[in-house]
Length: 193
Image (tube, rainbow, N blue to C red; front, side):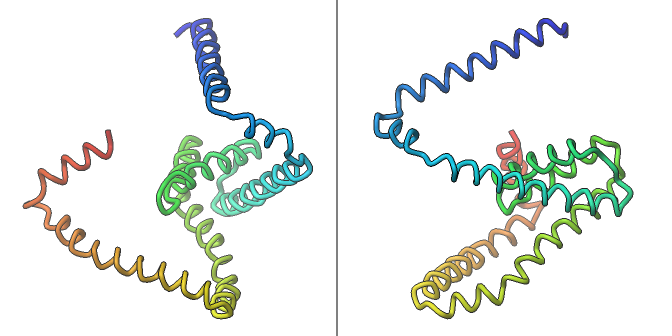
């Protein structure tokens, strides 16, 4: 594809997205919404942006350090890009699985061997999970201290238990394989298309 065609198609796409955004903004944002935007204290907005970059800096350094232990070396720019994209992938997928898959994809693009990538992802996940293990006593103490919080946690546990019990027969049904092969294939086609 010629470079000039790529450039003009990018310009047209940008103008289309910008026009769509402006149309939706002018059509649906009320006067109260605009007044709210003008009343924002930019000190807190700046602080949020700084914290956002601190989080991604820590995440990037953690992943880069672990990857270096496996002999994977790449630039800081690529590490930031991986952190940003993986965080988005983790946010929009159930159980944050998309973040790990995006890290796998980004490192695979560099030509890294699969076992090194999965080792890096495993250690990154374990190091992230260690925070939750350290915070567990604080969570338990906070939960026990308030009757209202304890009730909410128990309701969440009951809901999780109900969904787990409901899902067990479904898992057994899907594992039968041969009997449900056609149905499972249709579901996979539907979900992946």
